[in-house]
Structure formats: structure tokens, C-alpha cells
Length: 425
Image 1 (cartoon, rainbow, N blue to C red):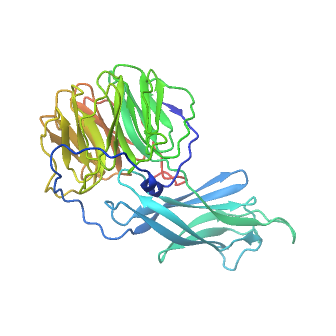
Image 2 (cartoon, rainbow, N blue to C red; image 1 turned 45 degrees about the vertical axis):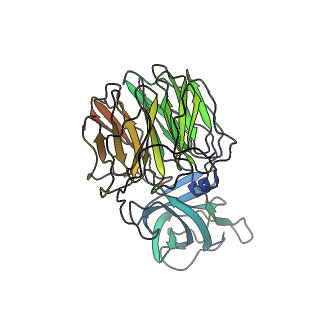
């Protein structure tokens, strides 16, 4: 059984995360790896699927921008033109800002859905003459079009006009999956903060958690029915039996928070930043970090050891860094990767898995390889990984909400999404 819980949250562009700042911390751990990320040149894109949504007299046309290179992680300014015209030729009257000229800043991020350009047609989307037409968007020398059907007439001369305008699209990518204690269900969460529960994962009801940054993760309290949610600005939100032990909300950070992990007792948690800064709350102990250290690639995740007396950090290039009683069991140094690494998960008896945005799974320290999605066609990049309590299976979750199960991880349903407004399939 699936339940979806929505939150009203300000969805900001991922490019704004660069403004966040992290407290300086000290260095300890294994040296940076020399992993080989896929070569990327530029920040190009091609048009993908498009779709139409209607609301309160306004239609919204969405146009997906697929990355030119699946491995690119970048932000680009897109200048585009949107124009509505009859299919039979000629032009419409009574549409203001037609053609529309606009510029949007969009970001391509590993493990996230591609960005979307959205054009709103307001004013009851009327036009004259009332003939079938299309809305065409042109950018970077390429064009794509969406049908508008037959518009209603705006009425006699002097009547209200309709108009075209750019529209910000919400960030809806799924970012994480968190299983229940007995492996009988799981939660997934998107960047806006919408939580979907499946299997025996109890619902928390409708909640509202205001944040100035996208959500980046959800983790469950070990052995209890509760969850913590963390945002890129370090804000922490607790639900069910989860106790709030503090956050970085309001703290100036040098880099965005990218992950969170609970202590084995469930009485604390760690946050980790893209610069390798580690922040401990509750009974979580600080075992040093990479804050202030020059890195070959940003940190993308943290996994605690079974004892809770140490942790591993992993970079997007597959470099692994050890702290406390975390043992170094290998990394992807000097390995040519097909996609950026997006996460790390620890085994219940030691060792760890790394997962790539293409669904590739890599095992270290004796944890079992139960399969992966590497080299298989995906509708969207993989966003996260979670391990069963036995350590004999794991789930992968796609940025579109697709769930992939391996080993003793069971499937309890999925709630697939598409880029905002795009047509599924």
C-alpha cells in the first residue's frame, strides 16, 4: 500500500546552492583517489519530451532539456524563444508577448531528473482566429513544439488578451530511499519534500516543512517508526518517533549538505557537506572530516560503521575516505567510470557499496554483489541506494521514482514521476 504526503516548500534552483557556506573542519583519512570520471566538455543539451498542464485559466507547456553528456554536472543560462502560431500558417492575434523571449538558468546534476523549461499561457489561453496551432520553443539552434489544440476566441476587438510568460518549474526529482527496520517497506522523498511510503512504512500524515533549499535525503530511525529529512542548507525535519537533535539551519556553509546518516542507537545523526565537512548531532561523535581540504571531486555521501565509531565518505569520482574505526577496503581510484558516483551504503558487518548515477554497483570489504542496473537502459538516472538489515540485498531508487530490488530486498511498489509536466513514457 502506498501513501503520498505533500509539503509546501520553496523549490530553488540548484545553482543557488553554491551560496551556502560550511564551518571549517580538520582532515584525517585515506588519500584522494585518482578515479577517472567520464570526460565532459561544455554544458550542452537537447530537447526531450514535452507536456501540457492546465490550471485556473493558464496552460503550462513544459520542455525537458536532456544533457548532451549524461555525466555532465553543470549550470548553463538558456536563452529561448516561445511562439504560438496556427498550424495552417499566418499568425494569431490577441496574444501578448508572442513571441516570448526569455532566459533561464538550469542545472544538470547527477542522480537528478533533467531540468525543464516551462512557458505559461495565461488569460484563459485564448487567441484569434480559433484554429488549431502549436507552441514552438527554440534554443541553441534547435526547436521543439507542443500542440495547443483549438483555442477559444478572445472575443471582439478590445476584449481581454491572453499572454505568454516564463514559469519556474518545481524540482521534483526523487533524491533518496529509506527502508523500514524489518525491511517490510520504504520511504522515498523528492526535492520538494513529498514523501511516499510503501509496504509497512507508516504514513506521517500531511505535513509542511518550510526550507529555503531542496531536500537531499531521508533516513529512518534504527528500530523505530520515525524519519529525519535533511535539506541542502542543513535544515533537519523529524517525523514520527524521530527526535530532533539539531541542524545547520541558519548556519553559513561553505558547501551544500549532500547527505545524512543515523547513529546505530537512533539517538543522533551526522550531516555531510559537498566539501567533506562533517557535522555531528545527538550521540553522533565527530571523527574528523575533509572540510578545508582540496578534493578531486565533491563528496556525495557518508556511511557510518556498524559500531557507530567511525564513517566513510565517498566522492563523486569514487574516492573513499575513512575516519574513526572505518577500515579502508578499496575505492574506484584509477577506474574509468561510466557515470558519477552518487552514494555509499555500509554493510551491517563491515564493508561498503558504492553506486553510480547509471545504476552501477561496486562492492568493497566483503559485502555481496547482488546485481546492478549498470549498462542497462534507464528512464532516469539513479538517485540513491539503501541496504537491507541483513546486508544481503539492496534497493536502488531512480530520480523518477523507479525502484530496483536486488538480493533479499523486496518490491513494495513505486510512484514513478516524470519531469514536471512531461508526458510519461
